[in-house]
Image (cartoon, rainbow, N blue to C red; front, top):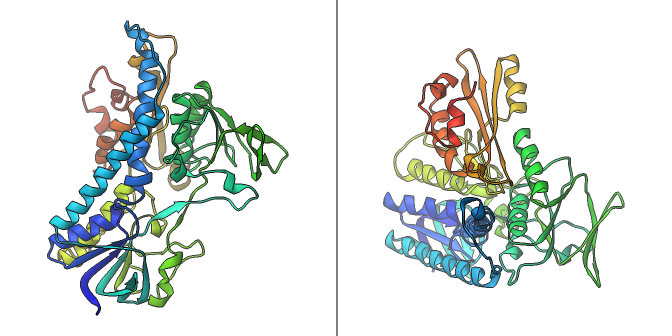
Length: 448
């Protein structure tokens, strides 16, 4: 017997859950298929446990600066195991909350891995399910490079399984995951190295951000090497050694972490049975309305290869439900001016165009404002961390098209400025806003 639904969502991560629950609120008979714990990457091996680890590292920084404010503190080490137990228990509670939320909205939770039979039918654990509409939201997973000895390393998934903090760590990669994990490990006491293929970390971000972060990383004690193309990893009596194509070697270390990108979870879906197209990397292309090349099949989140961020998947999923089940014709996510934060040390907040991209598109119409300073948090100590900000404007009215911040509080200040930019704020609007003093954020409305 085949069960039938109005909507079947494959994937119980942030985007899939948001889509199914919003559709159910409109009265749709919806189901979610998920083979793992609910919440997907973000809740289980991504944003949430990452932020907890960042908070732990943040406490380490605060303890370091506490004497500047008159505290006499003795720190007797850090209990990684105890932190992991509390973190894992918190994640397990979240898994349960997600399940309860589905129950409250009448969304059926189907446990297992799905495969397409045709454009309206999927099979899970030998049972068939049909739906008028199907949404693919299966997310992605970390890439392990195809080199000899790659199995000696772990990915970000493995990082969250570590029962003890490794004393010597080598992180390979230049993106979010690399700089965030390296920052955590370094702050908590690990001897940390980072190697990248090109000339800098965070290559897709504004150059100012990557330059400032690299300086801060090296100042904090992280060893950073560029132009490194991994060729093979080797287990030695003293630990793991990574050999590069140019003859350099790095290590030995106790832990090698691959942070070299992510690939989509589409191999086992057998989407060809439904006529759904995948690109040469396995991602499922969609139009502006999250629709695949098959009329009744949609895709959202990381599996589409577009802006792999949890809030993006959630926003796309909810808007898709608004359009399909809420009567909001034309409703869709606009993939521009998407703010994001990198939980590095120091943090980075960014929204809009990089200076390079802005000049490529607008040429001489671009005007850039910058500010660099030492935040007041560091006023009383010798160990100081610089903050740097940049506003990118275009046109006679100097509309703000890029806002980039690295420094204390960058993570929390960016949300409001993203709203202003989405509303079309100009430099004059920023200037006419009364500053909040004393804060770092006030620099964004006082630049000249």
